[in-house]
Structure formats: C-alpha cells, structure tokens
Length: 290
Image 1 (cartoon, one colour):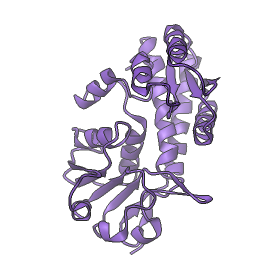
Image 2 (cartoon, rainbow, N blue to C red):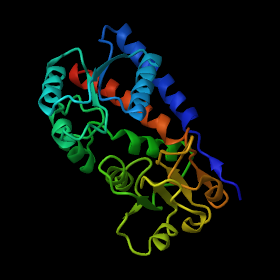
Image 3 (cartoon, rainbow, N blue to C red):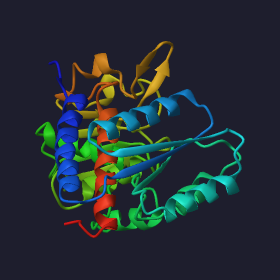
C-alpha cells in the first residue's frame, strides 16, 4: 500500500482564495482592511522565514501586515510596552509575537499581555478556555489546520480513535481538545501520548488517526503505525540540509492510508488559519462578525 498524500499547499491555496474574496467584500462594503502586526525579536533564521511567509500570505489575500523587528537584547519591559501600544492601536486587528523569544524574556508573560481580541495565535488563557468549552473566539492555528486537512481528505473523524503524540500548549493539548469536541472533523475518542507514556508504540498502533507533534526527527516509524491509519505530521526538523517531519515518511507512507508530507503539509495550513483568525479578529472588533 502507498498512502494518499494530503497536500497542505493545495488546501491552503483554496482557503486563501476564499479569504481573499471575503477580505475584498469587506473592503467593498466600507470595512477596514484587516491588519496583522508581527513582532520578531532577535535574528533566528527559522523565525525570520516563518514571519516572511506570514507577510506574503497576508499580501495574497489583500490584508495589511506590519513587521516590527527588535534586537535580541530587547528587555521584557520593552517588549511588553510594545505589545501594550499594539493593543491600544485600533488599526491593528491581530498581534503575533514570533516564538521562541530570547532567554531574558518570559514567553508566558508576553503572550498573556496580548489582548484576547487580538490574540490570533489563540495562546491567551481566555481564548484557550473558550476553545475548551466548545465556544471558541479563535481556533489555534496549527491544530485547526490539521483538522481542516482531515476534513478535506475525507477522513472520518467521528468515532475514530485519534492518538496525539505530544502535549505542548501550541499543538498537542489544543489538538486533542479540537478532536474531542462536537462538530465537523471532531467527535473522536482521543488519547494523548508523550515522552513519559509507557509502551508508546502499542498506543500509537491503536490510532485510526495519528497526529505526530513530538519535535523529534523521523521519530514515528512504520512499526508504530496501524495499517490504514491517517497520519498527520506536524514536525519540522532540520537534518543536515533538508527538512523532515516527526514521521519517517518513506516507511510510514507504505503503511498508512493517507499522510501529510514535510514540507508542504501542515505548515501552509498553519499560516492560512492565522490569516483566517486575523479576518475574524477584524470582524469581532468592528462588530461585523456573524
């Protein structure tokens, strides 16, 4: 068996096309142009690439984006002051502080300081709480992107056993929360596995849907995957001069029924969902949301 490739680039392009239409319609009706402000502290090359991709995605759908670059030695108080000014700026709808931050800055304090109405990454505890209760203001970008890929690929999620490998605040925990909710691309029975899970391969082999977000290159091998499972690979790891996921793609694609590639799988969807959240933020802030 050779798995169907779930093409995140293709799905993300369709999402962007739809969003471009909605943005154009908003502006034609006299609404403001949605505006995303991204803050980049330091000169981490991977972070710079991510932010540049987000800027390009904004341009493609007709949104405004502003990049604010700060030196690596920026203090926490300076960054918090900047976030406060962006919170107060009515022309800014979404605020993104690119992670990771330099060691002198407490990431939690900074993320908590972003207005919940402008928190387009869905990291603020207020937005996380709303999501957990099934009444989200925003949905977290990477997990939501994974869910959209499952829906688009025709994967039957309701009643399936989904195993999420990883328990981070950014992917693992919110991914499990989305899959267990009532609604499209959800209603799954969910297990979270992680570094302390005993008999890990035994757990992952039970998965009808396996989401790998553990941050270890090619960690998931073919013998860890149930034949016919759908595998969503969230990992992005640089090994030598190439990018690989958390899944051994070549081997696992011979076992799974469908699989996302790296690159070109989840990554483009994360950015598409960020753009979607920025439009929603603009609608919420101007009282035009449905």
